[in-house]
Image (cartoon, rainbow, N blue to C red):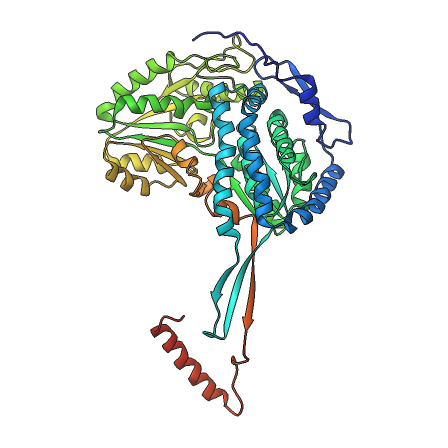
Length: 522
């Protein structure tokens, strides 16, 4: 494990950073000191938004949304096509910003930056079909019909987390915009710069000014006024906070989509390719320094290959290059903050104190930067330990043995979470069978998470305490719309005609119901 010297990119000028945060309303005068994670040095002071600021942001977004929603879909899509090109053109700058604010290694920053054009491209292609009017049969064949019309919700609140601020903040904004909505986006204070850069690019692409507003502040201060003004909320974050968001959404009678925590399992069956599984486990446990909602924290390995897997996994982990660098050298970067580093360390120390064995890692690395922590592998983790039952959200995994397929599935499902799972075997038919028995919104076969999450045509969400609703797929766009039913009756025939009695009308109706079923008209 080596130390890398830190040289901040010349692209991150004071002019750029101060220009980005000027977009954030902050009449209170309070600011958040947004720092470079690798060094702890100040990047810029971020304004903090008051309740009044938030109310005004929604009012401004609502005014711009009236204009945006009046545009034909083709015109809105032209803006998003330009935005797609601008993201790719400015991708290196985006990566620099993501790294500076989050501390992640460059590989993860690059992959995060790719999510936005991938999602945008999918919905550019899919939106015309999803948002067009759809004609349906009415109650009386030939004499009635209804039309399903998709209307934008209005102004959507998007609350984005710190672990993937650009991917979640902007990728969730895109389908809301395509559907005709305005957006008020609240990124985490620690990682507000990349979403602000994304909004700048949207306006450069031709989005009406004010359509996407960005407000900043601590969750307890800004969450309630945001939901009091919003027509829908998209939230990504912890299960505990998700419950609060869900309660506020219910109180205000608005819809919500919540992608929450996970304690995700990896099952390595006896016929798996051990070398491939070990290689994947490095990303599964330690990608983004373990700060991925869908990353693996529990690894279940069949008895017959457990020792081989463990020894190779420990060796490969100890060979990882950890460091602070704005190039593609390091395999792992930093945790997002010193506070989060301390939380991760507390989980490891709790496990150690209660009898778990640290096979490798288990130490902070202040020699690399303020918030670095070694990739850590534990054995003997139990449900009584924090690392055994709650989401650690760091580079810490537990190894477990299993003897049978049924036992592995039972272990995988022994959690209140259900966001992601990974199954490793050379028998794909068997893998499909195992996957369908795991209580998880996403299951990857011979992969960790990318295949599921990058399949933009398929909904991705959590089961149990891991969330409500989904992003991606048709659902990921339609959730930002309301369905309006416009029905037409061409002739007044849904009542007795002339001198016909209601008894006769009822007999006729019963006969019609039978006939329509037989002819498959209804």
